[in-house]
Image 1 (tube, helix red, strand yellow):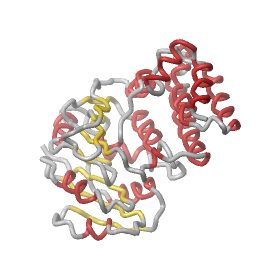
Image 2 (tube, one colour; image 1 turned 30 degrees about the vertical axis):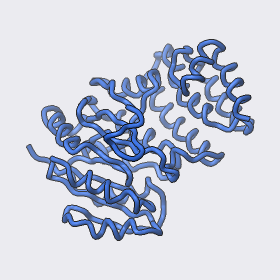
Image 3 (cartoon, one colour; image 1 turned 180 degrees about the vertical axis):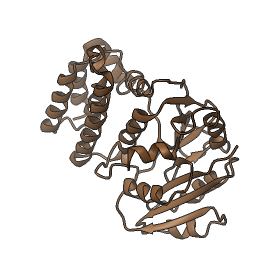
Length: 317
């Protein structure tokens, strides 16, 4: 079996973690790969550490700061691989992750199928996970059903869980550089829209590092909520097109906005009202739909969505 895999890593001020990430990428049992580190205008030693890495398969591209999406797009334009593996500069993947997913993809329609696997969250050592983020995957012959299932069941995947044919990525275009939040959700909704099927590879394990204060997912405020709304609306439109005349599942899509509402500052009444407006257009889903933590789930099961959010806003003042 053969197939060049391009591992694309955007990096910004990642000097503390980039060496470990490069070790993880270059230590793959699938040896036919290239690693492209796009340094996004770091002011620390990220680029220097990567440039000194003793593996000829590593290429370092230095660019001015423009965000992770722009850096990934630069990496994609440079990549020569038949398959693309995205990683962030603090991510890790199991040594046989790519090999297992390649073995699965090379037995099927290699240009239109994508593979994904489980992930664990860790803080210091991947061997000591702080949580098992997701491990209950399955195959999907209708890829958009994966997206609906993720909304219904409350799971999500970091980008490095996936392995994607390059031809498929070329057909959907670049990462959306307008987005500051949920760029991966928007990007992979386009992947799912054109893929022929999704393959679950249960031993292809990825690790997500928690506690990174620079992580975009930790950022809050109006500008980031605006980005979440833009991403949600783009994903919503694709799901509505997929569902067509099937109105019975429209309310599932409102999970996109309920999750935004969950992290929106309740004192920002204008933004709260905007999010509720989008939810009303789609309808409220059953209370069993997963949003928020255990305490909030108990509140909505007992009080319903509206009162649960009111109760949550009182506790966060």
